[in-house]
Amino acid sequence: MAEYVLGIDIGTTSVKVCIVNTKTSEVAAQHLKDTQSNIPSDTGPGGNKQDVPKIISALNLCVSKLPKQLLQEVSKIGICGQMHGVVFWKNDEEKMAWEVVEKDTSVRYDVCQERVSALYTWQDNRCSPCFLSTLPTPESHLNISTGFGNATIFWMQKHKPGKLEKYNCSGTIADFAVAMLCNLKKPIMSYQNAASWGYFDCCKNTWNKDILESAGFPVHLLSEVKPCGEIAGNLSGSWHSIPQGTPIGVGLGDLQCSVLSTVETPSDAVLNISTSAQISFVVDNYTPNSGPPEVVPLYYWPYFEKKYVAVAASLNGGNSLATFVKTLQQWTMELGFNVPQSKIWEKVIALSSDDSTVSDLQIKPTCLGERHSPDTSASVSNIHVGNLGLGNVFRALCRGLLENLHSMMPKEILHKAQINRIVGNGSGLSRNKVLQMEVQQLYQLPLVFTKGGDAAKGAAMAFIN
Image 1: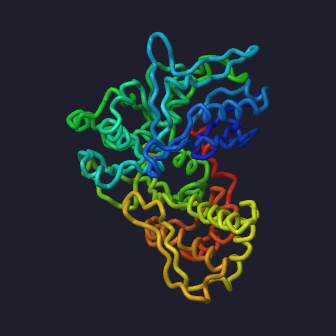
Image 2: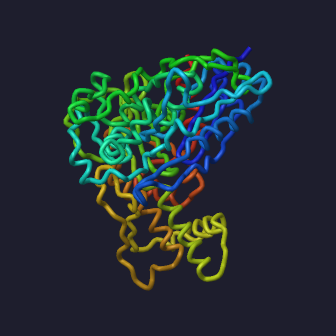
Image 3: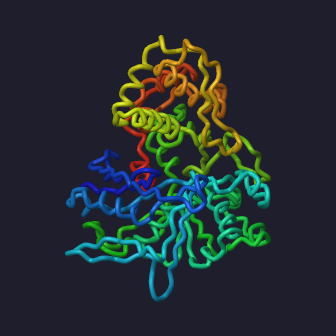
């Protein structure tokens, strides 16, 4: 009889779950749901928050849609999610931050909203360069940026200390889900998620507690850290027919899980364009130092089996293109028309797919800045009457998005690492032929799409022995 692993990816815009056959590594069933969880920020346009109950509700719904006969054969659960972000919650002897709701012979987990904060995501910009300059230097090869969990906690400690006092636990959204399903009083983090928060020494695999304590940081909020692939606990109840007691792994990074399910050979690089954009490849022989970190566009994040993944991670990906499409829709509404965004996407891609739309128009679509250059802004140049067609503009926008990523990880780096093809994933890339053409033009490497590229599948694969 085949055994199965449930893989869960709690992403920036959606939750995806899949059941993977442990013998064949094939996906037997899957489901996806948009969370629609964004909520207004308490710091104006610089903040970015999401509603945790909505995210967990989407998770419950996704799992409930999977075939019960397969769920009953799940032997392990792997969970990954959006990195860097932080959610706070309170657990004590009297009550936990979640409720276990019994339904027939199964249970579901609901969030106690008064005991759980919003999720402050990786897109949160409340930590300005000026504020970040006041923070202590990490003892790590990784720098600290806005949107990183520990930077957000520093900001909260200074500007909203009363809010922090309400909670005694913190973690990424994946860590929260693991703690909830295992009914853990204190959360557990993987090396991957800890590194994504900053102030984590990947040589010693420990938090920079002395540095943080000296700066007045609430170190009691930091989680215990375990290696990637270890078990965090066991499912506390029969969840949508998954047997009670099923082992659940520590929460993982969605980037690493996406790479794990995508690469087929050591000579593969992975290009993901969804909300953001990343290009990455696995490095066998990288040795991190203990700092001080350099401000560089290329990061080395903990991967699996003591390896690292080299990553150029741009904050500007599909979100930049989506902003352009949303702006076009707004303009049409102001002119008295209502054009669905789906029609706009279809039209702009069709108009810009022809080589005749290539022009000297230059667009730098870095509206959100970059972690290594937070003050970077967007710009448009070389404008003249001959390159203002809609096809010209969208083609230049797609090219500018890829040129920005290429500036962070040039083709020479891939050549030196003996990369001979790029494996693409992410809906922002797979649905956009224009981006695909620009990738091959810039990197001069074949772009292929495989059956991988799924972080939920990667989360399951991480726990297949």
